[in-house]
Structure formats: structure tokens, C-alpha cells
Length: 200
Image 1 (cartoon, helix red, strand yellow):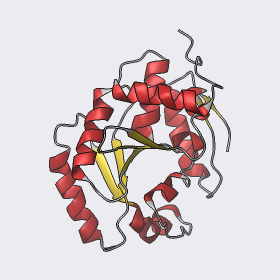
Image 2: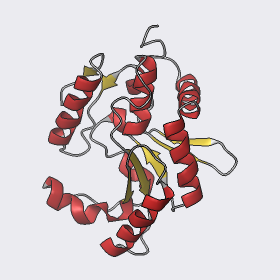
Image 3: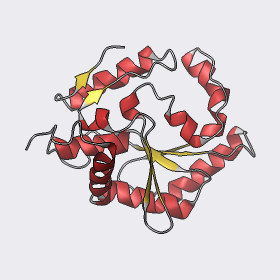
Image 4: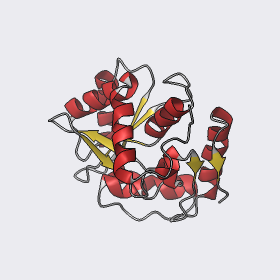
């Protein structure tokens, strides 16, 4: 089956395909259900576990192939201490104890506090969890999902879904993050050789 069969289709069609893929992937759906029950403010499952799952379906690989972890973002500006975030992380270990891959939980209200030390450049404070998705080093990675109380899926994809369905890793130059982009793109190409990686 052609792995590019959904490339270039309208966003609404790609979104419907994405939702079908997610709903048929227990690793993701179990994480979304647990995250909904955890009910952190502005939470979303983001990035790798989503687009990696799509690539596995498109290239007919096992469902968990290449998925190192599940990233769970939330936004709580009421307490920016590391202790508050660490408490959420520790509680999350119990919430996601059944997950077969680690769940990495991060408060996006705190990113501006540690990003400069880790990456050597300033990072303006975020106003929402979704704001952070638009700053990912790749437009391909910029995708987040939330499972609503009624069972519906809510998608945030500021650059659309075509890079994912086109098997293209595309840089997002909003930050000078060529190093992070290159590292992630190199690993992705090794795991999914069908990918096309656009240079920074």
C-alpha cells in the first residue's frame, strides 16, 4: 500500500484519518484516557507518539516501532516551582503505571525557566500549553491531541498535518534550534528510512 496515499489531501480528510489511526492504537488511546482522567489544566498528548504512530501505520510497521515515550504537556502558572511540577510527575507515574512506554509530563508554564540553560538561548514565557507546540523545532512534530469528556478528540496542529502524511520532516525556524532539529531528524530517518528530511 502506498505510504503517501494521504499526502496532499485536504486538512479535514487528513484529520479524520489521524483520528481513525489514533482510535485504533491502544498505546495512544490508553494514554489519552488516562490523561483525561488525570485532568491536568490545558493538557495534551503531543509530538512523537502521534506522528510516529501515523508513520508506523503508513509504512506497515508494528504499532510501537520507534516510540520512545509519550509526551504529556499541561499548563499551570499558579506555581512555577520545580517541586510543584515534580509532584505532578510523581503522581503521573501512578496514573500511567500501565503504559508500556514512559510518559514524560512537563508543565509548559515553566519552560522559559530552564530552556536558556539547556539550549543556550532565550525563550519567552508561554501563555498556553498550545503555544509551545508552535515552537517545536519541526513543523512535522507540531501536533497535539486531547480526549474530551464526550469522547471526542481535539486536535492542535498549527502547521497542519500534511508534513506527517507526506513523510516529510520540515524545520520550524521560529527558534534557532537547528541542533535539536538535526538530532531528531537524524534519528527519525534511521528509524523510518522512507522519510524525506528537509535541511535546516
